[in-house]
Length: 219
Image 1 (tube, rainbow, N blue to C red):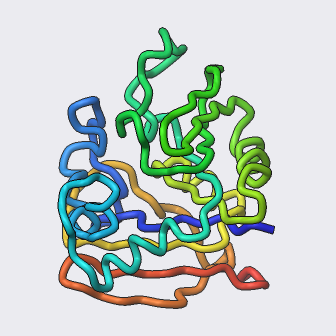
Image 2: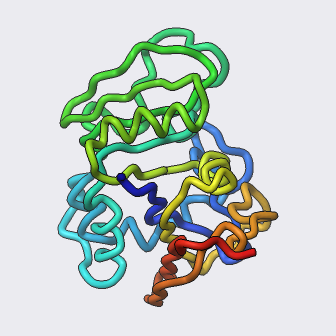
């Protein structure tokens, strides 16, 4: 069965995965962009967005690994766009332009139905109203044995963690303090859920930590 992964998710030193006051102008919240500096400079990111050669090395290795073996994604609605409530129309097609960086089926959690959205490059957004388990079942079917990546945001990752559905998590702790926002791990007992740190590597831009679920969750 495919694994459920969280990869390349950036977290501030004080534990926030997004800043406060998220909006169209600040999709990551106030100060949230500072969390992702390690990724923006990598060859993987620059290749996806066509902005230049980009840097190689440890940060790029983790960025590239985050896409390897992924057959489907799950996103929260806020990760897809700023529209709230019932969809007024089909005008909003995501933050990424005509060719999003996923290139596989993406399942967006929402309370409001919307028809699938076919984009360039192999990405199709499917809007799931049945909750996290329904989204995972659809994503696993679409992934055809490859892994399912939970891309965020914070609330969605927390839901999948608390339900015991995440098998591996790579967090990139960045040298930034947000002070407030969306706390990723507050109140979550990772040891009880069975996670152990299996790798950690520091660079000038981030501390990369991989947490893997063991066969027997801690008590």
